[in-house]
Image (cartoon, rainbow, N blue to C red; front, side):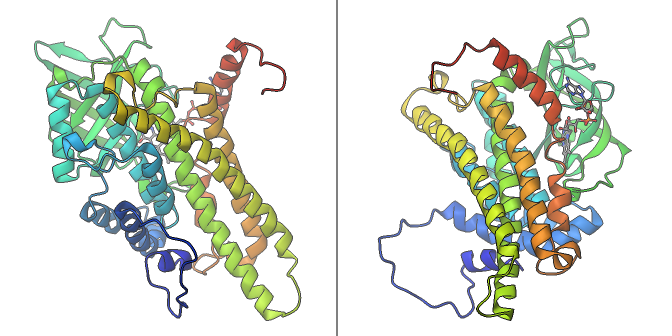
Length: 419
Ligand SMILES: Cc1cc2nc3c(=O)[nH]c(=O)nc-3n(C[C@H](O)[C@H](O)[C@H](O)COP(=O)(O)OP(=O)(O)OC[C@H]3O[C@@H](n4cnc5c(N)ncnc54)[C@H](O)[C@@H]3O)c2cc1C
């Protein structure tokens, strides 16, 4: 069991109670709920990883705590939390089980897309209400066979027949597709449309056939069950979000994904650093009066983690400001991502945090040595390292860097003294 999670969840054996020096803000209910779920997720994380199975126990707890609707606005019955608060939940969950946190993050990305681009449509408003009531879990099918990781193009196309649609897609990876209550699918607008003229469809479970085409025996993130499927869905044409997918991707999907993924990766790295700190303290106890040599690496790992947290905090501050702006104005004037749509900043958030997290855990492995390398010890970080190797691939960092390079080329030269 993860000691910091135990303590944070209120189970601190032998803890000495001290009077607080300053008034402490009451802890928000969602934070305590996230800590309770993280504790359960941590108990099952190894078995989820070993069996590459969906984290059932964690998601039962997430549903019990009603955390799947945290980002749904209060007017639809949700908790109406900001992206920054949802990121904090992702970070907490990732300290228990990375797959649980990544599934949770991916679900929230879909919620954000529907809320921002569908809530003017009665069908989508009703869907958000149902999601709150039934704690539905949403997945996504943006990647496609023959297209690779370029989610801004599709080969498959929507077929419209009167008020109805049909879509057929060969999806190489749909995380937790077999466990989802709905899947957001990208496709060309019509059979005649260009590959980049895409729409996003919300397909519900009872309207969708999933024929499994590939398993998920992966290096890490094994609990995400990111299998390949032939997806065939039918339904009402109103289920297609009215905004073009290019706009959904730029305004919402990419900034929200990069922020929440970064929070997940930061949480994984933080848990590894906690293990390194515990190992270091145990080493120090073994030889009183000496600072163990691994302390230098620990200082390095802590410094890198703090840089990640600081980088993430900048994105979260922007998210908080956007949330406040949204609460204070009409929704159309201030979309959630209004202050997050600085594409190149969002790109570098993703690429830098994904790589630094790996570096942090690599340091932790050197600190913990064999105790970290072996599975099943309190210092094991093999799962953390394997899980984090997915980070640079989830939309390949090279692909993102090429995009950043184009954006940088288009930018005006900075004023002297500014980056
Ligand atoms: C844990 C996990 C969960 C996932 N869940 C989902 C999901 O739920 N739904 C979903 O749709 N997808 C999902 N994906 C897929 C993911 O987001 C990417 O789309 C996918 O991993 C890209 O596949 P690829 O690496 O084969 O292809 P590519 O991104 O095409 O990369 C293949 C190679 O081509 C290179 N390359 C290609 N084009 C360029 C370019 N323009 N610039 C630079 N390099 C380029 C890359 O560097 C790389 O070497 C998931 C992936 C992971 C790891």
